[in-house]
Image (cartoon, rainbow over all chains, first blue to last red; front, side, top):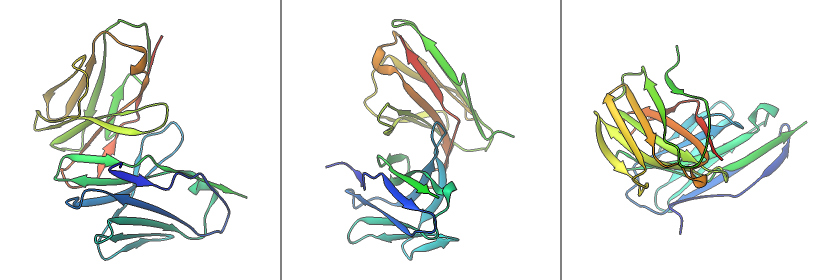
Length: 109
Length: 111
């Protein structure tokens, strides 16, 4: 079993759609959780951290379920510019960072 | 100002050569990392340095030797390059439990 697993995608959605990505992690001792975004041929960039209580940033909502070891990202009112690969990231014990394989999103007009 | 910079951006070389990639961060972070992203786009940590000391070495061949002359720099030297080393290498910096900031990547092609 991979340490961090994500929906394989790709997700093809029309503009304005709501799309949800899921991620599971295997190490119950994981401490920090993030969603990163990576555009084609670019470096990953932080989209948002994920907190136990859930958090929202504009059209983006992240949820964490520690009991199920599950993280989600919800994007509302998708824009063309949201097309990218979304990476689920889990940090365990400070220095070890594990990236999921990523989920590709294509938003079409 | 660029937060994390890498040079070169592109590197094309022959098998068996030795090459280096440089990384610098001006964010004042104590921790720096090297990642490899292969053709399947899977991003995997290679090394982590904290205060110039090696913290993580994720079963990377010893042909890869990171060097941290100071907290702001983490360079990656690769000996005897192989075809399978072709990938994008990303440097990153951050605090241990916080966000990591990535450099623009170095696209290495081994012929």
